[in-house]
Length: 135
Image (tube, rainbow, N blue to C red; front, side, top):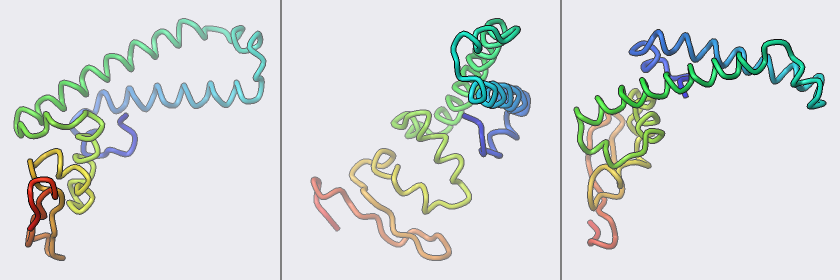
């Protein structure tokens, strides 16, 4: 969710730290389970159920905050409402390299399938969707 998304982590530092803690716990638990993959041994891990419940609640709260954050981005640019939250996260992650946003152009700009950019990232051509005519 927030792994590798530095810009979002700077906007949501508390949630970033909470997610890192949940991720660390989960990865540690999976290492333990990999060593002892028998279910009866796993369920006997002390404090497992309360800790998983707490981690789940923390992740749900982080997801709510992340959705609220993405909604503010959608309010600023209404075209973002045409994207899923995962797609919007991808765009926000790729803001430093607009070429990587290309897969989302069709959803953001009606009748435009592709943008052609120069090395200085100047738009030189917008290719229309073939169903509506091509340029």
